[in-house]
Length: 304
Image (cartoon, rainbow, N blue to C red):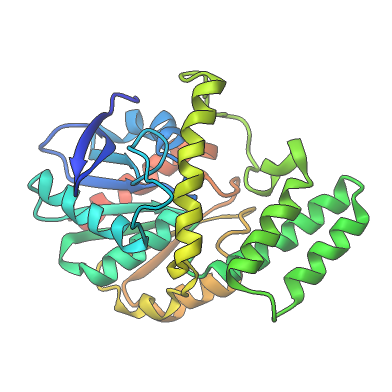
């Protein structure tokens, strides 16, 4: 775990971890955010998956342990997709499976629709396909939690914003950021339901994490300013030709019902697996179960 190296990919040093034998089927993990890290996934899953897969986990361009992107640097959504292709070629892989969590699921859909020949299986863990739909759902859950913790006026405002169809895209995402911050130490309740197996972040000091996430903030701000992330990928779902598994969590607000319905409607090669005891991160919250589902799905598709 966390035995990553910096590799130069398209003129930028990216943090990349590799776990498991070269003889195993390759699996790329794309973290969420924008601007999170592969840290928690590696903590819970690499030891569980490395017997069956060659797991390649990255911190995306400009994120955490990867080289920073500067505020005046040319950087956008397509850089993250082209990085995936460049990493695949760097490892001399004809194709691989891709597991994207949250915003990583958004990246996975875009990558798979642009480079279908590169991807054997696409696995989407609690993804977003549409930032506006996700932000509305997140605002509704934020409203319920604000109400739970006695912030009744803020809860009312949050729900009104969620229901206002004139507010969308970047404005809605920023309002979600503002209102979710009112939850203070209870904010992670939006995402995490099952806390039985928490991630141990003490590998780095608090000061180091602050430094790493300052980088990630620049990454996210540049993506917001560019605005490409606010284009719905629901129209891309019908382009997915590879076996595609949607992994949902019972208590996850990110993959809203409208997005699950769109997946069912448009992904001809699609299947859904539902984690009954998870919020937004089944890979943390039901770690053994998650690893089993991933292994069975890709294994079964290989005819084993």
